[in-house]
Image 1 (tube, helix red, strand yellow):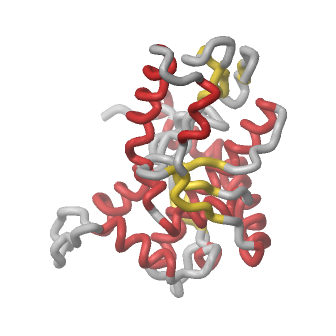
Image 2: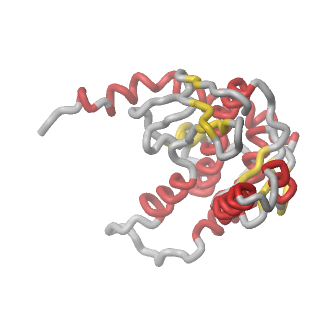
Length: 245
């Protein structure tokens, strides 16, 4: 961005960047990949008396495979990823995560895909306020980090956000490459305008029109779950209401 701005209602700000006369938009979804870690360590492979199976290697890849077998929308099971409260687009330390709309027909396959989708719903919630903040619509979104190694998560984000998702090549190394690009520009080997042309895109995922209706419907209910339950979360998790032992 070319200007300084702060949205105190949705916890979004533009901060000075390494590029002269430019600012970058900063915000944070509190838990994303951590939701899969929670699913792995606290539910599926929690070390208690009920554990009967050895922990599977490469479990995140297996999560991907399982999620791919479940239709979009996870049989209308919705996961809210607020396992550590949330910062954007709502600053609410008492909100908590959960699975909603479970029935006897649901299996852990539905729960696994619902976790992937819940993180994407929260990203869409945030994206709407970011685009209002910068006053333009993103034509496409680059995805980096560990989540960008998941084929199904990239496609779910494309479908839920209704934007093309571009997987940056070697996405886990994106921060290191960024630092190298900034150093090269500072030393005069390249200009800041040269950097974008050097970003390699490994794959691009287009939104699937067949999933538009179900994801639009479930996203609205995702936001409604917060609005309808935030007072309950506050009563349950506000430390001032806790009963001391």
